[in-house]
Image (cartoon, rainbow, N blue to C red; front, side, top):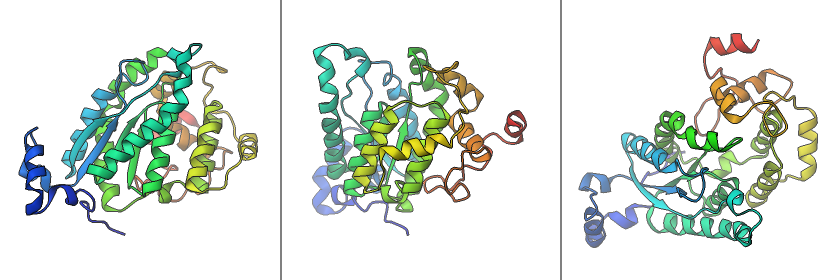
Length: 301
Protein backbone atom coordinates (compact mmCIF):
# COMPACT_ATOMS: atom_id res chain seq x y z
CA UNK A 1 0.00 0.00 0.00
CA UNK A 2 1.21 3.50 -0.81
CA UNK A 3 0.32 6.69 1.00
CA UNK A 4 0.22 10.36 0.12
CA UNK A 5 3.24 11.59 2.11
CA UNK A 6 1.39 14.79 3.00
CA UNK A 7 -1.72 12.99 4.20
CA UNK A 8 -1.57 14.95 7.47
CA UNK A 9 0.60 18.02 7.02
CA UNK A 10 -1.25 19.31 3.93
CA UNK A 11 -3.97 20.45 6.34
CA UNK A 12 -1.45 22.83 7.91
CA UNK A 13 0.46 24.05 4.85
CA UNK A 14 -1.65 23.77 1.67
CA UNK A 15 -4.23 26.09 0.17
CA UNK A 16 -5.03 29.80 0.09
CA UNK A 17 -6.56 29.78 3.57
CA UNK A 18 -3.29 28.49 5.04
CA UNK A 19 -1.27 31.51 3.91
CA UNK A 20 -1.02 32.76 7.49
CA UNK A 21 0.41 29.47 8.70
CA UNK A 22 2.94 29.41 5.86
CA UNK A 23 3.97 32.98 6.70
CA UNK A 24 4.68 32.00 10.30
CA UNK A 25 6.78 29.03 9.22
CA UNK A 26 8.68 31.16 6.72
CA UNK A 27 9.45 33.51 9.58
CA UNK A 28 11.77 30.86 11.04
CA UNK A 29 13.41 30.01 7.75
CA UNK A 30 11.23 27.49 5.93
CA UNK A 31 10.86 28.09 2.19
CA UNK A 32 8.00 27.50 -0.24
CA UNK A 33 9.79 24.38 -1.42
CA UNK A 34 10.13 23.12 2.15
CA UNK A 35 6.42 23.54 2.78
CA UNK A 36 5.49 21.60 -0.35
CA UNK A 37 7.04 18.53 1.24
CA UNK A 38 5.60 16.36 4.02
CA UNK A 39 6.37 17.72 7.48
CA UNK A 40 8.28 15.15 9.52
CA UNK A 41 8.35 15.66 13.28
CA UNK A 42 11.61 14.78 15.02
CA UNK A 43 10.79 14.36 18.70
CA UNK A 44 13.99 14.90 20.65
CA UNK A 45 14.43 14.02 24.32
CA UNK A 46 17.79 15.81 24.51
CA UNK A 47 18.56 17.08 27.98
CA UNK A 48 21.53 18.01 30.15
CA UNK A 49 20.09 16.13 33.14
CA UNK A 50 21.71 12.80 32.26
CA UNK A 51 24.40 11.30 30.01
CA UNK A 52 21.90 8.93 28.38
CA UNK A 53 20.27 11.69 26.35
CA UNK A 54 23.08 14.21 26.14
CA UNK A 55 24.19 13.23 22.61
CA UNK A 56 20.73 13.26 21.03
CA UNK A 57 20.92 16.85 19.81
CA UNK A 58 23.86 15.93 17.56
CA UNK A 59 22.06 12.84 16.28
CA UNK A 60 18.89 14.80 15.56
CA UNK A 61 20.88 17.04 13.22
CA UNK A 62 21.91 13.98 11.21
CA UNK A 63 18.41 12.53 11.21
CA UNK A 64 17.09 15.77 9.75
CA UNK A 65 19.75 15.64 7.06
CA UNK A 66 18.47 12.22 6.04
CA UNK A 67 14.87 13.37 6.02
CA UNK A 68 15.64 16.37 3.80
CA UNK A 69 17.74 14.26 1.43
CA UNK A 70 14.84 11.83 1.02
CA UNK A 71 12.27 14.50 0.19
CA UNK A 72 10.82 15.53 3.55
CA UNK A 73 10.91 18.65 5.70
CA UNK A 74 12.07 17.99 9.23
CA UNK A 75 10.66 19.88 12.19
CA UNK A 76 12.40 19.14 15.46
CA UNK A 77 10.62 19.55 18.77
CA UNK A 78 11.42 18.63 22.33
CA UNK A 79 9.91 16.76 25.22
CA UNK A 80 11.08 16.04 28.74
CA UNK A 81 13.15 13.23 30.25
CA UNK A 82 13.66 12.11 33.85
CA UNK A 83 16.77 10.14 34.84
CA UNK A 84 16.15 7.12 37.03
CA UNK A 85 19.85 6.88 37.76
CA UNK A 86 20.30 10.48 38.88
CA UNK A 87 17.12 10.66 40.95
CA UNK A 88 17.33 7.21 42.52
CA UNK A 89 17.01 7.33 46.30
CA UNK A 90 15.41 10.78 46.34
CA UNK A 91 11.87 12.10 46.18
CA UNK A 92 12.53 12.83 42.50
CA UNK A 93 12.53 9.14 41.58
CA UNK A 94 8.74 9.19 41.91
CA UNK A 95 8.60 11.47 38.88
CA UNK A 96 9.71 8.72 36.51
CA UNK A 97 6.36 6.97 36.15
CA UNK A 98 4.52 10.27 35.78
CA UNK A 99 6.96 11.41 33.11
CA UNK A 100 6.00 8.56 30.81
CA UNK A 101 2.51 9.93 30.27
CA UNK A 102 3.75 13.50 29.92
CA UNK A 103 6.27 12.42 27.29
CA UNK A 104 3.75 10.38 25.35
CA UNK A 105 1.06 13.04 25.52
CA UNK A 106 3.41 15.82 24.38
CA UNK A 107 4.61 13.82 21.37
CA UNK A 108 1.06 12.91 20.42
CA UNK A 109 -0.13 16.50 20.69
CA UNK A 110 2.55 17.85 18.37
CA UNK A 111 2.11 14.92 15.99
CA UNK A 112 -1.62 15.37 15.77
CA UNK A 113 -1.26 19.08 15.35
CA UNK A 114 1.53 19.58 12.85
CA UNK A 115 3.26 16.50 11.44
CA UNK A 116 2.80 13.83 8.78
CA UNK A 117 4.69 11.36 10.89
CA UNK A 118 7.28 11.16 13.64
CA UNK A 119 10.84 10.09 14.11
CA UNK A 120 11.72 9.89 17.78
CA UNK A 121 15.08 10.51 19.41
CA UNK A 122 14.11 8.44 22.44
CA UNK A 123 16.73 7.05 24.78
CA UNK A 124 15.39 5.67 28.07
CA UNK A 125 13.32 2.50 27.81
CA UNK A 126 10.33 4.10 29.53
CA UNK A 127 10.26 6.92 26.95
CA UNK A 128 10.48 4.47 24.09
CA UNK A 129 7.71 2.32 25.48
CA UNK A 130 5.24 5.15 25.95
CA UNK A 131 6.02 6.99 22.72
CA UNK A 132 5.67 3.84 20.63
CA UNK A 133 2.50 2.91 22.47
CA UNK A 134 0.99 6.29 21.74
CA UNK A 135 1.91 6.02 18.07
CA UNK A 136 -0.05 2.78 17.97
CA UNK A 137 -3.16 4.56 19.23
CA UNK A 138 -3.11 7.18 16.49
CA UNK A 139 -1.88 4.73 13.81
CA UNK A 140 1.08 6.85 12.70
CA UNK A 141 3.68 5.48 10.38
CA UNK A 142 6.57 5.77 12.81
CA UNK A 143 10.23 5.05 13.24
CA UNK A 144 11.89 5.12 16.65
CA UNK A 145 15.65 4.97 16.97
CA UNK A 146 16.79 3.71 20.36
CA UNK A 147 20.11 4.73 21.83
CA UNK A 148 20.97 2.28 24.59
CA UNK A 149 23.38 3.32 27.29
CA UNK A 150 24.70 -0.21 27.71
CA UNK A 151 26.77 -0.30 30.85
CA UNK A 152 28.33 2.85 32.23
CA UNK A 153 28.47 6.53 31.47
CA UNK A 154 31.40 6.11 29.05
CA UNK A 155 29.21 4.38 26.49
CA UNK A 156 26.51 6.98 26.81
CA UNK A 157 28.86 9.89 26.20
CA UNK A 158 30.74 8.35 23.28
CA UNK A 159 27.99 6.52 21.43
CA UNK A 160 26.83 9.59 19.51
CA UNK A 161 29.80 9.77 17.14
CA UNK A 162 29.57 6.19 15.89
CA UNK A 163 25.80 6.43 15.43
CA UNK A 164 25.79 9.51 13.21
CA UNK A 165 25.95 7.67 9.84
CA UNK A 166 23.12 5.46 11.04
CA UNK A 167 21.14 8.53 12.08
CA UNK A 168 21.24 9.88 8.52
CA UNK A 169 19.99 6.53 7.28
CA UNK A 170 17.18 6.61 9.83
CA UNK A 171 16.03 9.93 8.43
CA UNK A 172 15.91 8.40 4.97
CA UNK A 173 14.00 5.37 6.28
CA UNK A 174 11.41 7.70 7.75
CA UNK A 175 10.43 8.85 4.28
CA UNK A 176 10.52 5.34 2.87
CA UNK A 177 8.16 3.84 5.42
CA UNK A 178 5.90 6.89 5.19
CA UNK A 179 5.45 6.33 1.47
CA UNK A 180 4.87 2.61 2.06
CA UNK A 181 2.38 3.36 4.84
CA UNK A 182 4.17 1.13 7.34
CA UNK A 183 2.33 1.52 10.64
CA UNK A 184 3.04 0.07 14.10
CA UNK A 185 0.60 -2.79 13.48
CA UNK A 186 2.90 -4.06 10.72
CA UNK A 187 5.84 -4.21 13.12
CA UNK A 188 4.49 -4.94 16.60
CA UNK A 189 3.44 -8.54 15.99
CA UNK A 190 3.69 -11.59 18.24
CA UNK A 191 6.65 -12.75 16.15
CA UNK A 192 8.41 -9.44 16.66
CA UNK A 193 7.93 -9.58 20.43
CA UNK A 194 9.31 -13.12 20.57
CA UNK A 195 12.35 -12.02 18.59
CA UNK A 196 12.83 -9.06 20.92
CA UNK A 197 12.74 -11.31 23.98
CA UNK A 198 15.21 -13.70 22.37
CA UNK A 199 17.53 -10.84 21.52
CA UNK A 200 17.46 -9.60 25.09
CA UNK A 201 18.17 -13.07 26.44
CA UNK A 202 21.03 -13.58 23.98
CA UNK A 203 22.71 -10.44 25.33
CA UNK A 204 22.05 -11.17 29.00
CA UNK A 205 19.43 -8.45 29.09
CA UNK A 206 17.74 -6.99 32.11
CA UNK A 207 14.30 -7.10 33.68
CA UNK A 208 13.58 -3.77 31.96
CA UNK A 209 12.71 -5.79 28.89
CA UNK A 210 10.01 -7.66 30.79
CA UNK A 211 8.41 -4.46 32.06
CA UNK A 212 8.42 -2.55 28.80
CA UNK A 213 7.73 -5.31 26.29
CA UNK A 214 4.71 -6.42 28.31
CA UNK A 215 3.43 -2.84 28.37
CA UNK A 216 3.94 -2.39 24.63
CA UNK A 217 2.28 -5.72 23.85
CA UNK A 218 -0.73 -4.79 25.92
CA UNK A 219 -1.08 -1.46 24.14
CA UNK A 220 -0.79 -3.18 20.76
CA UNK A 221 -3.26 -5.92 21.66
CA UNK A 222 -0.66 -8.66 21.23
CA UNK A 223 -1.01 -11.60 23.66
CA UNK A 224 2.16 -11.79 25.76
CA UNK A 225 2.71 -12.95 29.34
CA UNK A 226 5.62 -13.06 31.73
CA UNK A 227 5.76 -16.85 31.28
CA UNK A 228 6.69 -16.32 27.63
CA UNK A 229 9.96 -14.75 28.76
CA UNK A 230 10.90 -17.90 30.65
CA UNK A 231 10.02 -20.19 27.74
CA UNK A 232 12.02 -18.17 25.21
CA UNK A 233 14.98 -17.61 27.55
CA UNK A 234 15.37 -21.35 28.16
CA UNK A 235 15.96 -22.04 24.48
CA UNK A 236 18.24 -19.03 23.94
CA UNK A 237 22.05 -19.27 24.18
CA UNK A 238 23.98 -16.38 25.72
CA UNK A 239 25.89 -14.85 22.80
CA UNK A 240 26.97 -11.50 24.27
CA UNK A 241 28.26 -11.78 27.84
CA UNK A 242 27.44 -8.24 28.94
CA UNK A 243 27.60 -6.61 32.35
CA UNK A 244 26.36 -6.37 35.04
CA UNK A 245 26.34 -10.17 35.11
CA UNK A 246 28.90 -10.72 32.38
CA UNK A 247 32.40 -9.66 31.42
CA UNK A 248 31.88 -7.02 28.74
CA UNK A 249 30.20 -3.64 28.29
CA UNK A 250 28.05 -2.38 25.45
CA UNK A 251 30.92 -0.53 23.78
CA UNK A 252 32.62 -3.93 23.31
CA UNK A 253 29.53 -5.20 21.52
CA UNK A 254 29.48 -2.08 19.36
CA UNK A 255 33.10 -2.58 18.34
CA UNK A 256 32.44 -6.21 17.46
CA UNK A 257 29.56 -5.35 15.13
CA UNK A 258 26.72 -4.20 17.36
CA UNK A 259 23.15 -5.41 17.53
CA UNK A 260 23.00 -6.29 13.79
CA UNK A 261 25.80 -8.79 14.35
CA UNK A 262 24.05 -10.18 17.42
CA UNK A 263 20.80 -10.66 15.50
CA UNK A 264 22.58 -12.27 12.56
CA UNK A 265 24.57 -14.58 14.85
CA UNK A 266 21.38 -15.46 16.69
CA UNK A 267 19.69 -16.57 13.49
CA UNK A 268 22.60 -18.98 12.84
CA UNK A 269 22.59 -20.46 16.35
CA UNK A 270 19.97 -22.42 18.26
CA UNK A 271 18.19 -19.20 19.07
CA UNK A 272 15.48 -19.98 16.53
CA UNK A 273 14.26 -16.48 15.89
CA UNK A 274 10.78 -16.56 14.43
CA UNK A 275 10.40 -15.75 10.75
CA UNK A 276 14.05 -15.01 10.14
CA UNK A 277 13.68 -15.49 6.41
CA UNK A 278 11.02 -12.79 6.10
CA UNK A 279 11.80 -9.25 5.05
CA UNK A 280 11.73 -6.72 7.84
CA UNK A 281 8.94 -4.13 7.38
CA UNK A 282 11.10 -1.07 8.04
CA UNK A 283 14.29 -1.77 6.10
CA UNK A 284 13.14 -4.53 3.72
CA UNK A 285 16.21 -6.43 4.89
CA UNK A 286 16.45 -9.74 6.71
CA UNK A 287 18.22 -10.52 9.96
CA UNK A 288 19.69 -13.59 8.30
CA UNK A 289 21.82 -11.34 6.09
CA UNK A 290 25.41 -10.87 7.24
CA UNK A 291 25.59 -7.21 8.37
CA UNK A 292 29.33 -6.90 7.71
CA UNK A 293 29.98 -9.20 4.80
CA UNK A 294 31.91 -12.44 4.65
CA UNK A 295 34.50 -11.21 7.18
CA UNK A 296 31.88 -11.37 9.91
CA UNK A 297 30.96 -14.89 8.95
CA UNK A 298 34.58 -15.98 9.21
CA UNK A 299 34.99 -14.39 12.62
CA UNK A 300 31.93 -16.09 14.07
CA UNK A 301 32.53 -19.55 12.72
